[in-house]
Image (cartoon, rainbow, N blue to C red; front, side, top):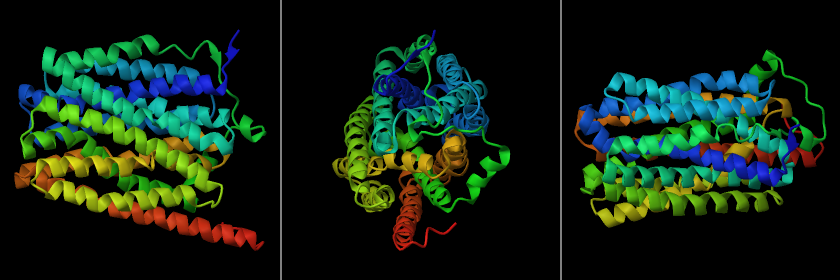
Length: 414
């Protein structure tokens, strides 16, 4: 018989699995320079590798979102972990760009299942007052897993070659795929104390008409465009523009992503939870203000020719950008009805990657090919961040106004 999992233990398991999710994702940029050289591919083609991952990721997310609001979620999670881990291992056997693109699509498909379904499980285990903190802990796996990906990838490549990094990262996931199956998953909507009906297709489509959801998502699109491309090209940028070795660049990003990402995610998430007790717009304020604060710092990082200044500004920008990690996902979950959480995450994944980082890595690579200057090409990234910050500030202002109308008894607008 399946056993119940205490919320804390469920969160621990899901966060650990999410760590492997992001570790596998960030192995590739950690070994991009030697991989690019051995397979003789251009910067544009190298950017296309990330686009292939995103293609598998966002195209299958709606499918998993549809299933995630209707059938057993632990089985969908197990299937997803197995597929992304298999794709990671197979990447280590790639001999050309074509097969490499296919293997990265597999990784994207597997991660789409996990990323779509896991936040809904956590939301059903934690009541609203504790939900943002729980999701913040879950998404701490982004900087920690990313840091491990950069660090492990750089270390394995340095000693054993770039292919070994994919074997080391992928095999544990094959063994962990079944870890949730012995346990009973929380019922949908249990923390709200209501019975949740299975949504109809028209209910899902109405998500696109929700103003708050649109402001969250389109701000997230611009944020993901910038952050996704930089995460992909970051180590290579330090190698080509500042003359660092691949191993040193990977080590820098590993340490900074771990420290700045961990501190930023925790501080942003827990501070937003405390602030939310005083103002309903706290989550949105954290999003908008932190991103706009990162813009001038990011420009300084890309414009300077001083390596120490560039590294310091990159670390600061990463810290500021990770402040929004927990609140943005909480807003996605809470801006839709309870029975549409998996669908909302699926739509989020679909949109932020289709319109965000699906082509952003390739765009930067093509600009580098055209201008023969990666330093100029990456300036597009902080420019797009400005749009993200403005949209999220717009959400904060709208939330404040709606709260004021509710206090006066008018109720928020539809």
